[in-house]
Length: 241
Image 1 (cartoon, rainbow, N blue to C red):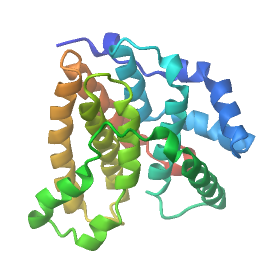
Image 2: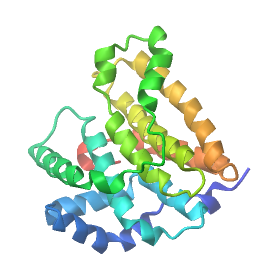
Image 3: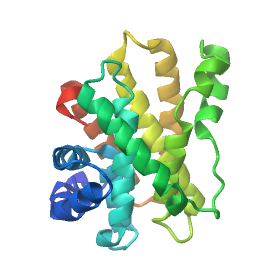
Image 4: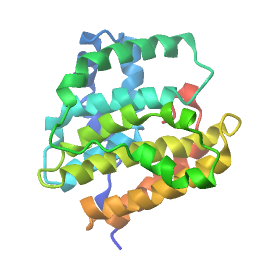
């Protein structure tokens, strides 16, 4: 087994080093200085982004060439995270409106017509549907749009495993959000959530082997560590993501 500390990095230092570039981009697109600062802090704790940056390094590519993709992941995942909390502050509502407007202008720039944009969320629900109380109405209101966009961004990492990287980015973002939904037990059916997490865990493990067999143990171990740590300290309004 590989030593996790020598293979998977937290990426905080790298994200801090791109802070000015990220802030400038965000403010040029209508985000206030205060909001941009909050989003950079969010980026430093973002599990999806951390794994994205590690995979770039594993593929032998330069992380500095992916600044736009980093920003896109921050924006998409920020909406996913904020949508978990039903008690939105006025600040968060304004931020969501601004981010949504930005995303609408970004969509043409992050399409990839070379990949199969499979709806893995729907496939997962269909597989556990007979054992759960998920309805078609619930499934139709889920988050495929965001997961797919993050998957497309991940697909840009690889030159020869595009579909696998799309699947990994999609499943990773879905697994992270499903994992943290357990922190809102009053708002969800925990049995449904448990079944979904089991299915996603299996798929994510299989896909991790496909995209990075050499670092498989490290990726899985570090992902689980980050998830359990953040779940224990989770307080959305303090941005502990």
